[in-house]
Image (cartoon, rainbow, N blue to C red; front, side):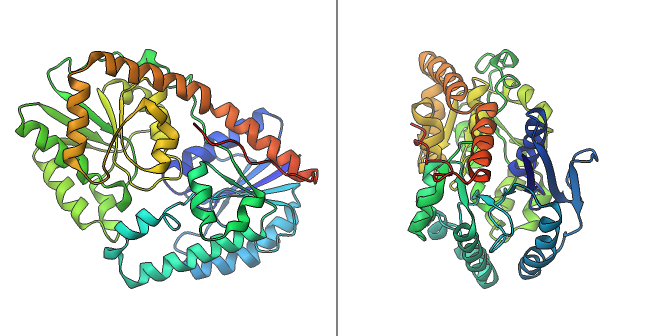
Length: 387
C-alpha cells in the first residue's frame, strides 16, 4: 500500500512529534510511505521525507498553493491513500483521501467564548476562513479521523453530516519510553512541591494560571516551583498573549518558575523529576502531555474540559478553567493524601497502557488506510469513546 502524508503544517508542537513517530512506525510496518513536510521540519534527510518551502505563506496563498501545486504533486505520486494529517485537505482529491481533524478551538464553544475577544478582527476573519476550509475539507474527504469523541462532537455541531464518515482514533504515547521506572523522586523530597507543565505556547494554554498558583502556595506557607516548557520569545508571536507574557515574565524573574524547551527524548526524565503534572489548557483535541504524564505515573491535575475528561477519566483531579485558586486546592489535596497520590499514579499508568498505546493508534490507522484503499462499504466504523 502506497501512502502519501500531508504534514506540511508540522512546524512545532505535538504534530512534529506525531509526524516523526508516525513515519518510523509506518516504515517498520512495511508501508510504502512518503511524508511531505515544511523545509524546517526537524528530522534527518531521507528518501521518505519530502521537504517543501512554504514558510511565510498567508492562509489564502497557502490555500491556493495546496489546491493547485500540491494537487499536481499528489497526482504524480499517485498514492493509494492521501493522509492529510493536519485539518486541511484537497477539495475533490484525485486520490482517496483520509483527513485528520486536530484543531478543536475553531469549533469549541468554550474557546470561542473565552479566548477570542483579545485577538482582533484579523484573527476573527482568519478563524472563519480556517473553519470554513476545514469543513469543506471534511466534506470532500473519503474518511475523517478525530483523536477524541469530544472533538468529533464539536465539529458535528457545525456540520452534522461528518459523523457519517468519521471515526475516533485516540493518539498514543510510547509507553515503554515513559515507564515509571524513570520516576525516582519522592513527593516533595526537597521540601518543595514541583509542578510540571509540558507544552508549547498558545493563548489557550494559559500558563499564567500555574504562575499564580505557585505564588498562592508560597503565600500559604507551601514552598513551590514550576517548570514550564515554553520560552519567553513565544509570547511575542501571539495575539492575546499580553496577560500570559506579563505574569510569566514576572514569575520567571522572581525565580518562581523555570522556562525552556526540552527535547522529546529528555521528557521521561523531566516527568520523573517533578511531583505533579499540571495541565491548565482550556481547549485541546487530545493533549499528548496528559497521556505522557499518566504513562509516567505522575499524579495529574488538569482543567475541567470535555476533552481532558475523556483522556484522563477518573485518574486525574480537575479544577475550574482559569482558576489558580481551584488549582492550588487540588494540589493541597494531593499534598495531604498519600493514598490518593499513589492511586492517581497507578491508575494513570494503567489507563495509558490500556487506551493510549502508540502502536495501537498506528495499527488502527493502518486498518483505516486499508479499508478506504480497498473501497469497503464502511471505511472505518466509528470507534467507542474513551471511557
